[in-house]
Image (cartoon, rainbow, N blue to C red):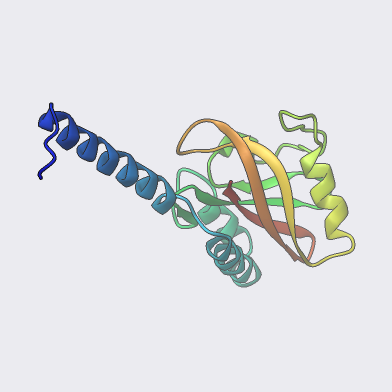
Length: 157
């Protein structure tokens, strides 16, 4: 006894749609940086900052792509909340952003500066616009303190 579908082309179409959906999920996952990627990038940025000073800050700031990998980029703030480098938005550089809030009202730069008073490295959660999707998403940033500055890079959840 054989089973034949009344519309065999629908079965093929369904299989193709499923394959397309799975490849989109894989592509989205592949375009996201991992927590290990963030830690490695921050470490690379911190090392450059120690060795090169302000030259490293220039390399970390958009439109340069030295410290950019997919949706991962670096930001650097001093302990007063002044942005020293930003891998996606150079307009932030030289501005005191200590009182900036994420969409939920979280003072995330102020929190970051406070965390740096007791920890040399840490993870921080907040919301920010993903440069790939252009959507506000939950983000987890890894930060490393270098003298009086914080080098941070994050992943979108």
